[in-house]
Image 1 (cartoon, helix red, strand yellow):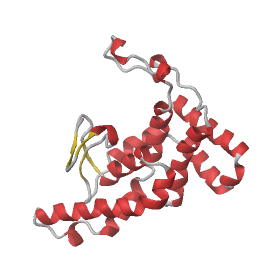
Image 2: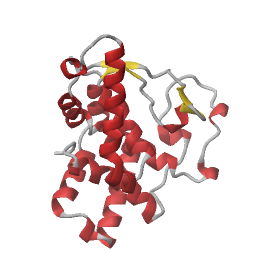
Image 3: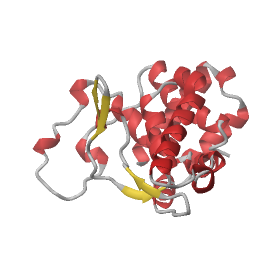
Image 4: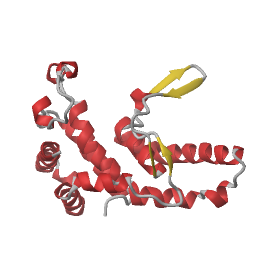
Length: 213
């Protein structure tokens, strides 16, 4: 995680130097404070927090774990299923599978689609969605757990931007013990402005949405 945080700090420094007008002081300070915090501890804490809205979540809810057919969708890969906030799956999906343009124009629609589907399921199960899980509760969940998505971005976006030659052959790892990331692959600072902005735009959206304070 330390190496990935360093990559995020480099991305922020480089983009602020070249496009500083896009990063007002308050946004930059909030991002820096997040990167200086114990991100791993925060993510563990959020995944273990329980309340009246907790449910069974997928835990690895991003596009490669969806199978699409013309008239149906199926989810796969349930190794990380857990009991927690619905916001964890929502924000993981949004921050790994969309760009800033899509979030700016469609985030509200995506949340509405999720909530409508949730209401239909609750009704099918014999509950009143307005009582069990009103829309205001979804907003509260996102405000409380939304910063989890920033931690996911710090972890996943630099890895997703690796060149093919930089991706290690994981099948050749013989040990079953956990290994530090730097022993498995060399993760360098993000090379392109587009890649850096992809990462920093997650922080921008989280900040503008009230998830980072």
